[in-house]
Picture 1 (cartoon, rainbow, N blue to C red):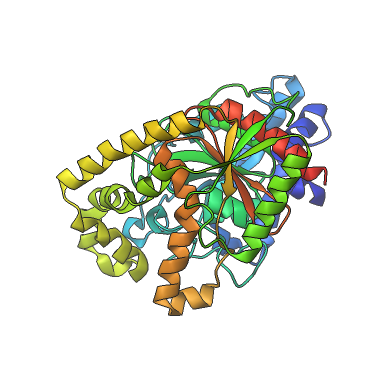
Picture 2 (cartoon, rainbow, N blue to C red):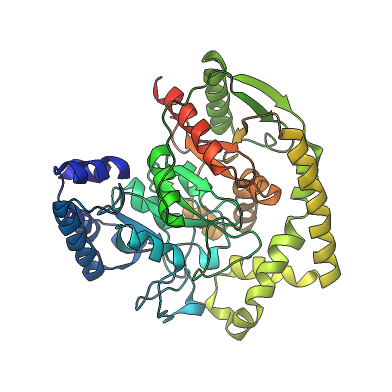
Length: 444
């Protein structure tokens, strides 16, 4: 049973379908691993034992009757603590929302339940999802799989830890500026940022609604494709027959390679060279609109985040970690005309980007310019916190600003990810290309 905890979600699903794995025993194995883990309360905010076992028993009955609802029917996964879960605390990593208990599941959780997935519980996250580091001294900071003294990446920090430590077959998170991809990269997982507006955010605690997206953190690209389908309440796409032959990738130069630390840069160079050796065409790409878009981050992300949460925050600011509070309050300096003008400019920059990259299968860059920072130093060195948080988010935020689909893949170097930017609503094509890249990297 112990090897179940390290298998991909699709492998577990096939085992259930073949009769080799009982969904109840599988769920009990995950619940037992969660409850006995030293970092249980740093990873999970709530473990939904009764719900998980009831859903597993229903999945077992369907499996015996040959009436499975999907490949992942009976597979246990975790949910970031900003997805509403009926009758269970959903507090978005914030003392401001302590005691918040919704009466209904979020739409994506309803979709997953309807296709037979088992809900193990809710995972810890950055406060109100407003940090790429995963540091949360107000509730809990989950561990990083590669460095016990480092942060795991955020804001879907517990989601990544739950998968990396074998406490869930997959995790569902959200990504506003990198919150799926950073923790995926730092914990050697596959993470998908969907296009804003593609996957329902109904029943999800917002940060900046125009940028908020929902996406999975998984062990494989195959799992990612299945989880995307589950979130949307449909059957998955077919990834078979993918190849690097004839693929054309842009290597983003503008901003993306600035200040990249030695290890992430070496991992990136090694990875793109491997893709070149296996037949992919790689073209360096300068895109000035990227730097212009990054300069709009403050009036776009911060103004919307503070506008969304101002009244709640200012009613009890003492309940927030000072670094997160300061970051939210920075949004107060931008007025309405500035915000609207920034969006008009971003729309024009997006049009330039899409025209520039239309001839490529994907744009490649390092997921994060840095490795996971040290927790103790982040807590005592304010300048270090600000610098590392901004650098952590710099590359991933490009995908959010340009409004595209994006993925992070493990490179084989611990805590170093390869990011692939696709087209808006182009998740299917991006997943097929990512499957070819994953196969190439795993063949080393």
